[in-house]
Image (cartoon, rainbow, N blue to C red; front, side):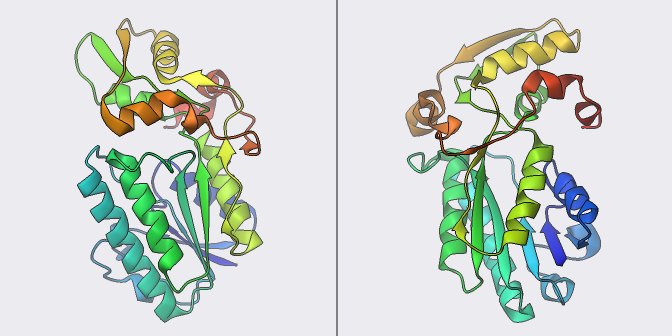
Amino acid sequence: MRIAVAGGTGTVGRHVVRAAEERGHEVVVLSRASGADVITGKGLERALAGVDTVIDVTNTTTLSAKVAREFFETATRNLLKAEDAAGVGHHVALSIVGIDGIDASYYAGKLAQERAVAAGRVPYTIARAAQFHEFAGQLLGGMKGPIALMPKTLMRPVAAREVGEHLVAVAEAGPVGRARDLVGPRDERLADLARRQLAHDGIRRAVLEVRLPGLYGKGAASGVLRGTSDAIQGTTTFDEWLRSPERAAV
């Protein structure tokens, strides 16, 4: 199968590319560097010639609902338009476990993406996953000073590698509308993950857990981001990931 990966150089995208190639698929990476821009739509139809499935793991970093919606709606609209013109038979979109009642901040963009995919002409699968093990480090890297503030977040983090493998399996199965959710093997708190990562790296820095206001903060603290009992469970724990070469390569 010929699979195009939008966002194929990112945290999850690189694992999607590797997993797809290991399973014998031909992979096309959609990126501005390769001449395919999901925001402008430039080069997409040409890049999708002969493609059977598109896996969309594009992402933006923002807490603005407006910015998130604009990014994901624009990228999805341009991808689906080009896919329809090129005859692509399956669109796979990565989303987030448990966000149905959190139409705010970044999650508002992911819900808008899901609605756009469902309303499109291309047969689709929406595959939701829990937050990645990399999430704590990404937040730590964006903060300066001796104290790191972590939003109260109850989660079941999963290895990005396992998400990539899951998305390829979803692509192989064909369009089903909604795939089973994928979560990690253990319940965790984001602040605890940050503390363990700092300790593992030998960095002395205090971590304070804070409850964010509004719908976003309430949702993150509620436990809904841990998913439900019928979700597929990954096998790599956060601490195993910390010690792995996989983490060292991030």
